[in-house]
Image 1 (cartoon, rainbow, N blue to C red):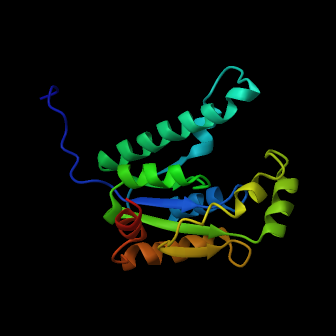
Image 2: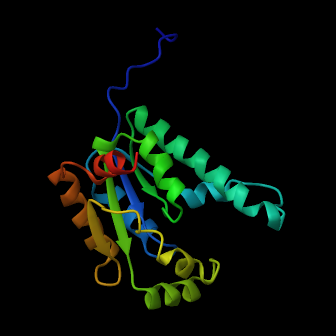
Length: 189
């Protein structure tokens, strides 16, 4: 009995929150965990970066970030493949990140959310936080949503995290077909 790998059913659902640094992804994720039915996990890429120990030479920083992101993608895919529902907090600021996730996540069970915020507000939030590289949001601003369609867009300058989460929950229950991931997989792969 204890030697059998448990059957966990089909894959879980993935809500992928795509936005720049300081756009409000983590705040929305916290609200989603509060209002979604069933069990959900919040998987923020920042948590994976926070697990890293040791010093990184400046010349090695981008390669380290890329390896961490690739590992993070596989951890997310593994959680979903095992039947877990996950809210993912990750900026698709580099095209390869989206392409990698298109190969890993179940496209029919992935809701891609554009978390938007005007650049002046992002700059204000970065300065107020003090725990982020100033200017990171500006560096990501033009690329994070450049890949194409999302299933839903939310604007954190116009709506609270709770309001954004409620909009996302409604979109999840509306089950758009084809999903943005299905469309992107067909057009980009």
